[in-house]
Image 1: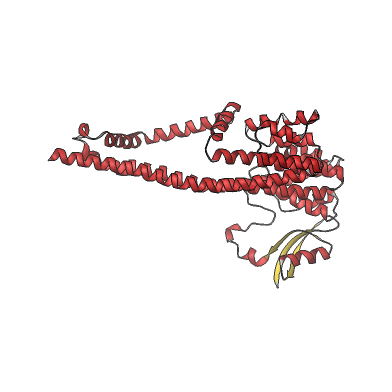
Image 2: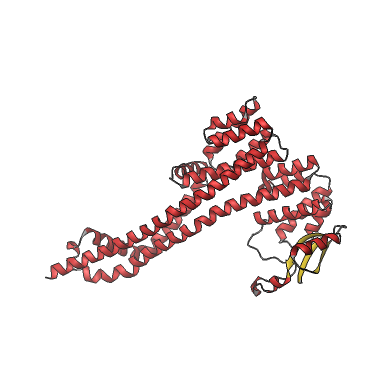
Length: 412
């Protein structure tokens, strides 16, 4: 039998830590529940002992790069832990006290303490969270408000965790897919710079006397090498400064619209980005509907999760049409940004009274399309980058060989 370390909440609202022997983690959790405890964390001690020494931390401290604010991952963890305790029957203030007694970074502990004080003062949890809108946002707050209104806060928080997990998985799949092309592009740039700085200058002496007779390609390569060698630091500083100013401009409204318009026109990435935005909208909208949020409120909140300004502007016209008595399917079709399959699913949902399930099904379809689009894009992008790198290096080498041949002809 394996030994597990656990942290659990007692019926009195306290935090209990200890060890338990069981055949599996599931059995350990089941035995803790039978003892009247609510497991918050159950860890295999053998696996913990095998972790690198550098990963160990002292009790009461947590290594993190989250800075002075709670991270998305920490907010997700708090939500998951709170949902577990509420489903186990702990009162809200007792569950928050348990969270406060757990091993969290100071910013996270301060956040839980603020929420606990507000709840103890008679404030609903949704209002306490709304005061920290930069962390939770309207979607999170409205989900909690719907749970309070229905008296099923624990179940609603569980669905909220599932939604946040899906959105995180989708976001991470996009980021992970871009890592390899970014590395490949960086290697390509560094390789070209290495050739210009270390290899091309070696031929400068050979070509010096015959410079005017050299082919244009050879002169361009030699000039590029000299430029990088003589003004490399200044060029680097200029590129960094230009990149900083460009990134700052991109954060403005005009910059975002310009950048989004360029991305939309890209052959494969533009389509993937479009479907990713629609997947976020539909998943948020469907999750809110499934938890009792009114359709107009859900449309407004879901529309704000779309980063593409063009799509966001198109979706703003949906709520007024629905408010005036129109059908949601026709309002979405009028935007021109949804495919017929999406419109038909929404129409079926309206006719059968299962709009929330149909919208979530549409979100799942769009998620799969995004994953397929990312794989297809990578399949095309990787050989393009490799061929591009090979072409640049080949041009440099051929230019140098052409210069050598020219020098030999002059010598004869």
